[in-house]
Amino acid sequence: MAGRKNIAENRKARFDYFIEDTYECGIELQGTEVKSVKNGSISFPDAFAEITDGEVWIKNLHISEYFFSSVFNHNPDRPKKLLLHREEIKKLSRKVDEKGYTLIPLDFYLKNGRVKVTLGVCKGKKQYDKREAIKNRDLDREMQRDFSKRLRG
Image (cartoon, rainbow, N blue to C red; front, side):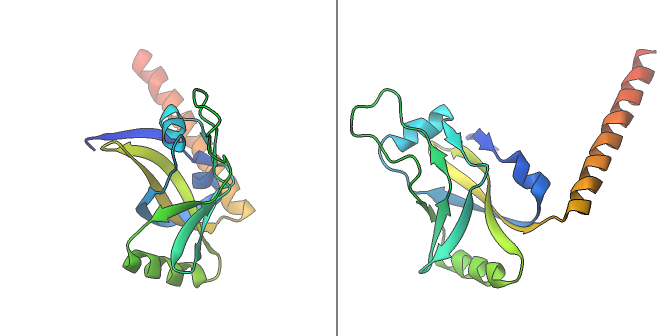
């Protein structure tokens, strides 16, 4: 994709959840938050989004204070509003009202100079699903090793 630069990715979410659907969202940031995000000073291992009064808010997203700013810095842990069309919010709220679905930020990136979030409609994995994922990952790694050994001789 032209004009896209990844800032951060939530790899843990892809392990802990089945991702049913994804949405590209804008995020409402204040002042120095934009510079902190562009520097990659962002942490969101436990972040989630919730729909309140027809608006989507992301919680537990930590954007560190910008190092070079003055005393007028932002609150690192404040909830941030996600920017979506009204129809998309209605679809999301219908999906989240179903049992077991939640909204998880999957990655943050810059698109044409603007900070964007990929929001996933996710369903939690059970322990045996996680074990299956680990087993498949190990098998793939083992196949790659065998393949590279055969190539080398």
